[in-house]
Each structure stands twice: as C-alpha cells, then as structure tokens.
Image (cartoon, rainbow, N blue to C red; front, side, top):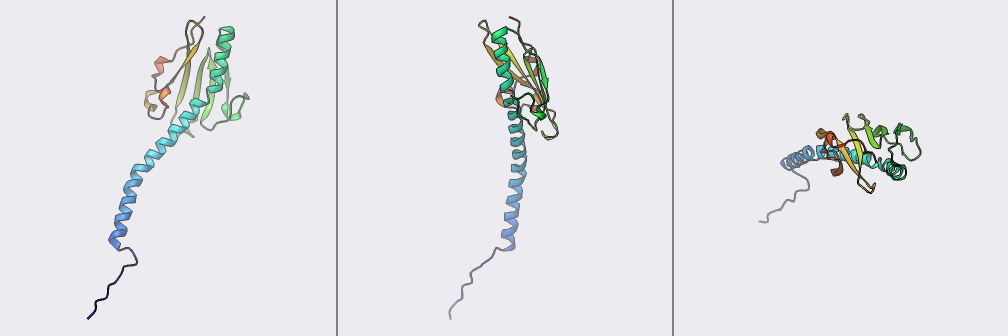
Length: 157
C-alpha cells in the first residue's frame, strides 16, 4: 500500500492569524515613530530656512556692527531669498535675533517656534544658538536643543 503525501498549497487559518498579529504589532511601533520622524524633518527644515537670514545678519553685523530688523511672511516667498514653506507662518529678524513661527497645521497641531540668536566674539565673528521650547526637544535638530532662556539679543559693538 502506498501512502499519498498531500502538499499544502495555501496557508492555514492559524498561520494567517499569526501573520496578522505580527503586522499589527509592527504597525503599533512603526507608525508613531514614522510620524515623529516626519515632524523632526519639518522642524529641521524650519531651522535650515534661517540660513539666508543668518547670512544677512552676519554680513550686516560685520560691515556695520548692527543688527537688522525685518519681518516677512514666508508663505509668499517674499523677500526673494526666502523660499515659500508650508511649515513656517512667519519669520522676523529683530536686532539680529531670528524668530521663526511654525505653522501649527502643517506641524501636526504643534505650535513649534524657533529662535536663532547670534553671539559675537572680540573679532566680531558670530556664532549661532538655536532655541526651542523644551517640550519640543525630541522634534528639534540637535543644534536647537537649547532652552529658550539661552537665546538673548545680539551684543552691541
């Protein structure tokens, strides 16, 4: 008598349930991490948007030893050095201090604001300090993980 060997060509019900459970467990871990990663990249883009403003402040300070004052709406792309951004509501420069107001709607309903402050040494070289509210440290790039009290106005010459 010969035995017939039956080969299964499909998954059993228990195998399918195990696969669904594994996918569900991975999803509960991966989706929140992905959302945090996306928010971190948006805050980093907010910081990088200050690069032209930092250049202008540095140039003005080195040439005339003063901070400049300027306010603009980044959604319109005005002035020409600022590219329109969905993450920034407004940006202003007051006495060399750059304040970036985040667009809460684009930032997952988080009111994230950055302050980028220069400090000068005796040779009028500027170094920049970026500050964000401590409740948003986990979304801010490492250069912005300073308490907001650290950011003060640019020193006079």
